[in-house]
Image (tube, rainbow, N blue to C red; front, top):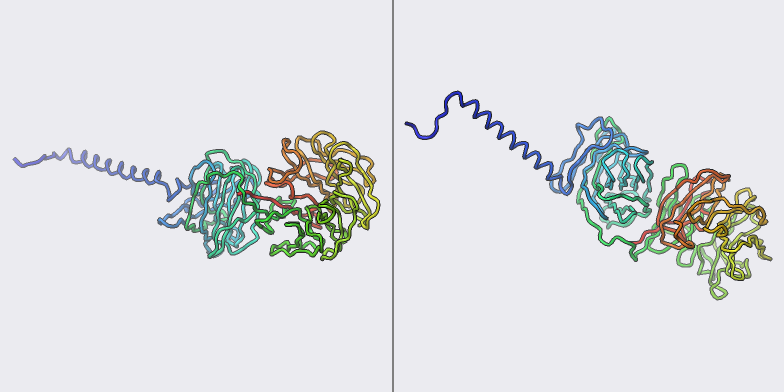
Length: 508
């Protein structure tokens, strides 16, 4: 008898079926194991939104870099369409990578590779991304809540290839670098409250639902940020916001504290104060240049430009034992001419005819609104209510002065005629509303809002830029940011009323 086991012919199919089943289970197990092993440092990848070309989307990982291919019409408005490679995380994180958006014939210049934090994998989820577009535009984009509109903060540099997105507490920010550079903060953080857990990862949108585009992400690093509260390192960002779209653009960033931009009448330059001086910078960005202000080297954040664009008014504390006094000088620089004899006086508004200055001043322990001829003379007190009245600014037709007052309890926006008559309350809500500024075209009023618990107008607070029709109507949010004192203390509108300049801050 032969050794071993001999199978009859009827047993052969049964054995082959068993072997095939074992092989199938083994292959399936390998597939499942691969899926749960993730893609490099990420857990998985998914199409988000409507991707008609989804059969060709995906990710390739070679152990060093990720090539992500995605379709999708856009990542904008209230819905996104992209391919997303993700990891589920909690807490505060940063994600950085070298990003190269591939070039193919006929592709859309707005295709983009992104580093993203996202509440969910739904198309209308709250999210933020640092996006490098095919045409080189780099921006920080965000949707504040599910189904809300998308907005962006554009960087003022091009030729960038390394990005980092950071989620610290309830703020998101972006850092950028060009070839051979170290990452540096791009400026312009915003408030985005994501709940744990959320998603972080890399993605591609083709900006064309009929195409698939690709981007390569190298040197990808995902890090937990520990102790992400307010740090001691300050960054100031001079920004503009377009009223129609609510999109923001970075003009200038610095590690010094700068404040209170004015838009010059030529429409191409901004003024701001910092380190006791007044500086001018092109709206397109660049290196600021100090305006010669003679002996006035302790200028505070209450300054502005005459209606005809030829003169500059400043509030300076270089004289009279450090009390703030108001001076005028040529907008190109020169020797300041004193206007107010008494201090402290803080300028806020210039009448449209150029003849009168409006300001906040402390006299006898009360802060009220005053006016004075631009060449000096007798000051006139316009408000007498108990409590602080501050921030007077004229409407373009000269018929009203808008200001903020504590007289009704919390700080609210009020208005009055230029002679102090017909004083009436404008805003009536739970926020503390400061520094109202009517637009040059007479259509809008913008102001700064603090939370109800905040007293005064301190720096380094969660604040909101809000806007409403000048004649009354719905109040809308322009931007939620970290700021306060120095953000929009003085008139900051562009001459055409289409944009507003302001300063936001970050603490690291």
